[in-house]
Amino acid sequence: MQVRQALPSDYSNIENLWIELNKYHVKLEPELIKEVEIYLPRTEFLKILEDPKQELLVIEENGLILGAAWLAERKHEGGQAIPMPVAFVREICVTKNSRGQGLARKLMANIEGWASNRGLKQVEFNIWSENRSALAFYEELGFRYTRHEMSKSLT
Image (cartoon, one colour):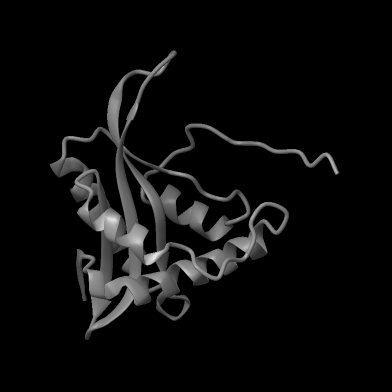
């Protein structure tokens, strides 16, 4: 099992992961998330691969991609924020059949390494509040809540 940078030829496999993730998010938050046929167009995928501030990682075994993570370097700026560069995890997903085998843990370790190698101060991401198993997983890895986003339907 290895974690590596995504290649242009990985597009279809990664897109399938994002579509699987999209369907899961639709189940969690059907009033906020719609099901899509294309999560990330190939042209956008290729732009990410060329962007020095972004990274797509895959975890594979025997040539099969079992998970992926999309990372971006960004800065806290403005207002009251303490300016600092951070790694933001835009997406992370492990195939349903591969969960519970330590793959997400390995991806997260590589994400932390990616961030650390760039001198970034922390790793951040958003997570749906209904995704209880993921919340427990990230807390186990040492992540803490730093803010909450709230919503109220008016219809």
